[in-house]
Amino acid sequence: MTTAYYSHEDCLDHVTPPGHPEQVARLEAIAKVLSDEAFAALDRRDAPLAARADLMLCHPGTYIDRVAAAIPEDGWASLDADTHLSPGSMHAALRGAGACVAAVDAVLAGEVANAFVGCRPPGHHAERRFFGGFCYFNNNALAAQYLKPYGKVAILDIDYQHGNGQQDIFYRQADVLTVFLHGHPGFAYPY
Image (cartoon, rainbow, N blue to C red):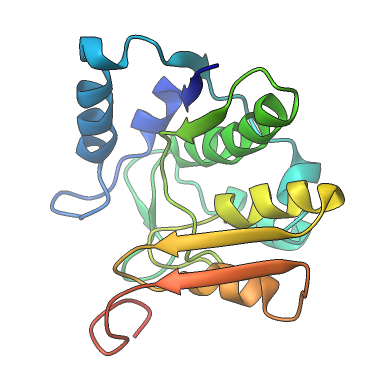
């Protein structure tokens, strides 16, 4: 059994302002490494678009609509000092969220042993009703919510920055364990 790798060209259409740390080059670097013959056995799959109902496992409809309404026709729109939108951002974000749901489905169906989602924008800072830290929809939390009917779920978030979005979504839910390994809070977003 193999590993599924979910990605989509739409994720390259989420373009941030020059010099922004979350940029197209991050996904291009992953794709370059995974193009090596050592990764030929990956089961490469297109990331589908997330359904609105799936997004609503973590985010209310009014929040989803607010993000969609902020998408600019050209250039960039800023939701805050770090979180920017370009014309392709919504489709990219929907591909990332949809890939997480598809990955869970593929693993549960026994099609693959595990999965890796190579999509952007990222998600672990997106709270239930608040964007931030480059994130709009919380893909990890969405995958965890989607898995909950099958039993208890654990998220191990290893990142220099704290996954405040996952904390916000699961703080009072006993059936999802969230473990964060991150840098000192005084130096790492969200401070």
